Length: 344
Image (cartoon, rainbow, N blue to C red; front, side, top):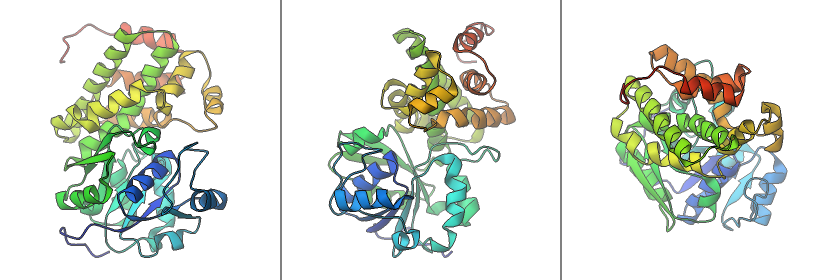
């Protein structure tokens, strides 16, 4: 695929592949910023609901979508004439979906990733998966990070995000394409740090949910968020991220939002586990949707072990979700770890 010059104009015709809560919310952001947006939905009835009724009741009940926003279940039609493509599907299904769309993707323009995770098996970040599957230059991939609770953005509450790309000008083009009166995007060239922050925070949010389910209060939550940030930053330093990224929107910003809000699927999922529900029961209670942190705790744990990085909270969530440990058992194991200085 030929490379697009870095000073390309702001994309006007944008396709969003995926119609879950975050994909729909970001499509609304783009439409409200004046872009010509088409969404692809897997189910024809959902595409019709978005186009004809102006809503997506399963994922964003009560939210009115812009009249200009169109949707289709035909990927060929959705991608026809696209100047930028937004990839809005769960991290563990990104590779399979993207492989099926290879012949339909435009030869130029940004590929924008909304997914937050580390792929099981390969241990690759989402931008790496995109580059590997499509063969595009990494400078075409833009990553969206930050405190992005979908419903709050869809209801037009003031929000900010980070658009990370190794090509700063391309990040600026998506910044200009998505900026509107309630959504303020910033740019960053640290793709590694932004992706790690977005992936790891889901695991820490699940830990905070478990603590809430056990009845613990503010001190515990503050401890988990702070120590969670420390282990995320350790992994980031090992992989070459900019330490400043973790003190910004893609780091502490996303972490605080996801760990604190009842809108966070990872936090609410963890809370159910903390109250004694099994993984299957928690999944059933969330409409069959599994929180990203359930799978990410395993891939991030493996990545950390590969890099020789200590991530005790991530390890604890893996043991809770996949090794049969109880919430109180992993809590006791964490508290019983060897004493050490804070910054070791």
